[in-house]
Image 1 (tube, rainbow, N blue to C red):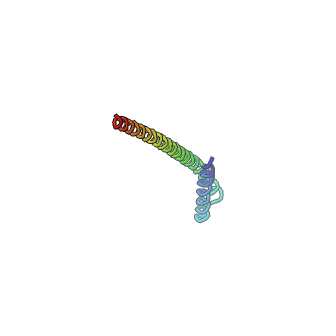
Image 2 (image 1 turned 90 degrees about the vertical axis):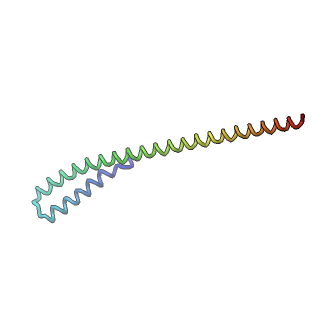
Image 3 (image 1 turned 135 degrees about the vertical axis):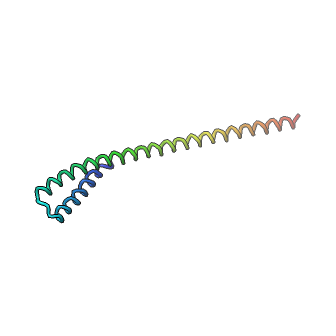
Length: 103
């Protein structure tokens, strides 16, 4: 939906170029109109293809960003669990050391 204006922009830009070219070249009116219609149709199709490609690339990029965010969250969670585990092991070692000192 974000890219719905791409085909119209491409089509109208090509139509403007076609109109300017036909006036400068002094083409007959019927030739200019037929050329304009063909140019508008062709470039509308090109614009639709371009909008689809841009949308697909944007969706892939968004999915990649989401996957990276999820991976980072999992990595942070794993590191936090390892830190807690190390702290527990350290506490156990200290308890054993204290117990051995008492004996």
